[in-house]
Amino acid sequence: MIKRGSRKTKLIFGTGDILTYAGYMNIKGKIYATVCSKNSFPTTIGKINGAETTQNVKKCPVIMMFSNIESLDCMIQALEHAKKAMQEASHET
Image (cartoon, rainbow, N blue to C red):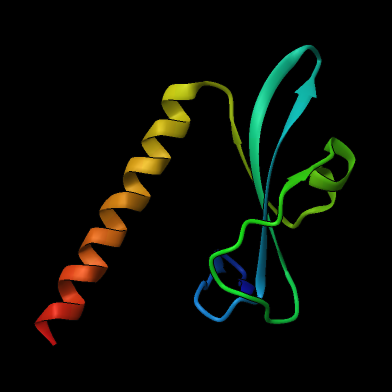
């Protein structure tokens, strides 16, 4: 669920109620890889919902934009570290 507060927006994953789309945007000739998320009715967890057009990406309430591959790689690494930390914490309990 995407929850907007006065100072933060939280994306709370785990119930299948956030649709996630990958795509790209061309802004004044510069290409950005995008990952956008929006609230939805619960659906199957673990499924990316395909690519979105630039027009639909702009309508998403949360858009991550990457202007280079290195930034995208950094986000992927951060998510991999979060996954590992969660797996390790699960084994401790």
